[in-house]
Image (cartoon, rainbow, N blue to C red):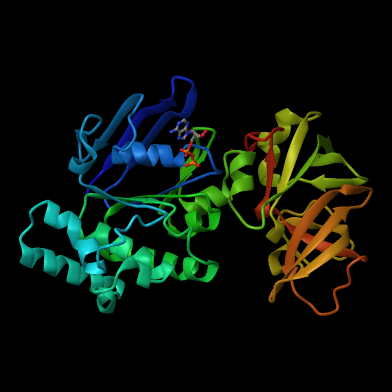
Length: 382
Ligand code: ADP
């Protein structure tokens, strides 16, 4: 168990490619931190610098109050699990798990104890004599995990460990990983490009883009209060809808206009922060789950009232494509007068939903955000 600190960490490849810029993070003892972001944003490079597999161009990495910049990977007391498992094909599962310990000259009985314990924990005791080629992808992944666990390292580093598994196995293994962390409580850094994996696994998530940290926080906090449009677009599925328009005010009510022939009111909680943007371009962000056909209890508008309620309001949308998901349906809609401005709504399923007809949807303000223009436009409410 250990704390881990990255301070002003940078990585420049070949004197020109800035892969990681000024990365600062404190990981608490026992914490599970996920680095997430699109391909090429610098996640693996950062992880590899912590592992010592990549030289650091600037800054310091500290494990348990000891700067490890110059410490060899094998002496950092970390264990890494890779995407491709990196098992030795000619060795049995037992040997694969025991090998690192034997290299360290650990007494045989202790090696056996650790391998047996880890195998039990992972449910692979019956596979110990097999070679990797006789294992399924999921089983290989467990062996790779087992090999990391037996080391009893201070820190676990995972680099997309589930990406070679099929969708179903990925989800079950994800749950097992979380369970394992709850039991072992080893400080962990986990890299993935999958926002769902990040949300479900992380105590905290580090959202990265272009070698920079965009936001660090708990999954729900990031989901509810994304600092900018990039983060808002990256976390949450299906992704948030973005509508560009101009911020206006009429009779004290702020709204986004220039979107077809509708006024899109903005939540009262955003109005104060938004006042300095009046007359300027803004981007309204609406999560697909913000919309529903039945106004929910507290938000129900009085008959005839379409605007300006504290919790939300209703809008009439044109519907195009309907995709059933079971309990829910995804409806691709557009705003009246703005056929190109598509909005995806995830609403409760009903059999008689007819695409092509207008639908009145209630918009829940809790899931509506306002951003400055641009891919990284900042959240106006924060
Ligand atoms: P991620 O893990 O988020 O997909 P990486 O950390 O692998 O991203 O890469 C970050 C950036 O550094 C990318 O632009 C990538 O092309 C570049 N990069 C990664 N490894 C090398 C390398 N060995 N030499 C040069 N550039 C590299």
